[in-house]
Length: 205
View 1: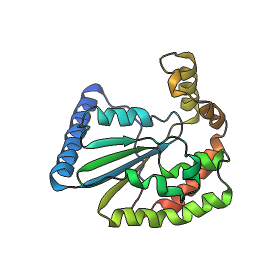
View 2: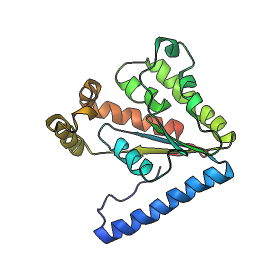
View 3: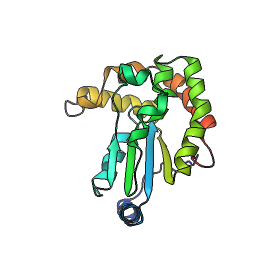
View 4: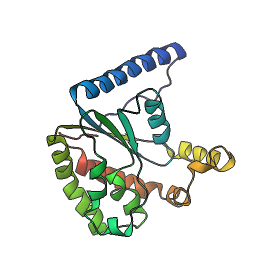
């Protein structure tokens, strides 16, 4: 997993960097469209880390005919009876598509495990099988990119308080966010174990 400096860029350097990244994003889009490429991008991270903002910054600069965002609701009773990753599979990209998962099958290794929505055996079982599932995705010709967005504990607190006090942002806050906020260290342990199990040569973080 790669780490990058969090030093802020100066305005002109930021604009140059942003323009270059935008151009690369459009190149990826055009490649997928004309070559029939398939790209799956997974965004995971702590609450308040900025997943939604990053996804918005990407999708507002590209074609909705190529890019598609998947943010699944909690599973139904029927879905709970299926193989865990089964409900995610129909959303994987076809030729010419780039799919962004705003949270993904890694819910099982994170929020479900920490908040008690699955058993420890289920979480550990998921971590055992997920490398094989992702190998099958990659072997099918899909480019799989996985990103974890981190935020420090103090900054997460500030962002949570901002969401509570700002009516324009209150929609970003759920009761689950407030419950999970108090379990920082549990999430850290779950994150680290997830990385150890799923940071593979074919699907690195």
